[in-house]
Amino acid sequence: MRILIVEDDIDLCGIIQDRLKREGYESDVCRSGGDAVYYVGQNAYDLVLLDRMLPELNGTEILKYMRKSNIQAHVIITTALNGVGDRIAGLDAGADDYLVKPYDMDELLARIRAVSRRPAKIEAECLSFEDVSLNLANSTLAGPFGTRELSSREASLMEILMKNPNHVHKRANLIAKVWGPDTGIEDGNLDNYIHFLRRRLKAVNSSVIIKTARGQGYSLEAENSGGKGRAT
Image (cartoon, rainbow, N blue to C red; front, side, top):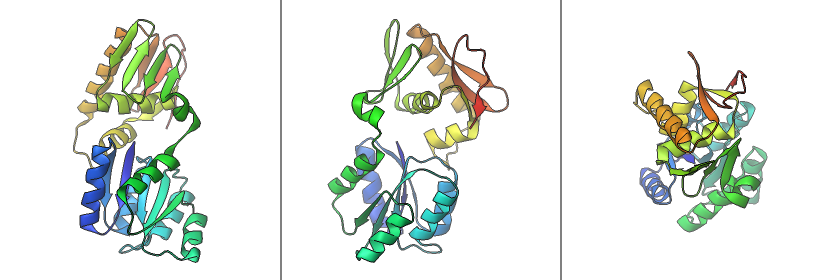
């Protein structure tokens, strides 16, 4: 899971980001409303921790922009404003949860786990497509002939492909979701990881393949599907 921290308190940003890293979450930070619009516009995040009071644009305005733009990332508003009206306004604008400062980091992590749950993930923490499955808890890929451990990057990339099989995932979107919108990596890094995943699929004797959509990106498909993925 990749999380965007939108918070103008630099010390608090550091504390949150350090704790998220220790809990296994990838995260990026921005400290103004203007920057937040750019970051959320990349559609690269699963969850946004959104401060209510920010320079340039406030959190409610950013949240309304997200929902109007059909950006479906979960949002937890964090703010010192604790009036009932403030909470109602945030939730009505499209927030999934509302956390009042100062808050305990353990409570924040519990809120993150709560809003990001999906039934399939709760039951098995596993994604499946055709004859291959990905265990999200321990980053292992399983097929007809055994399992293979994946690196964190490999697992993140495979998770994206498996959540939307038979769809062409654009290169820029894959890079933003796995490495972050501001990454300086070259396109060749993505190609390398696709190569690694193809080797993993072959090692477990899966019939699933990662197809290249020339000039666009990659899609996960059954070997004999013959279909063309829809770009996303």
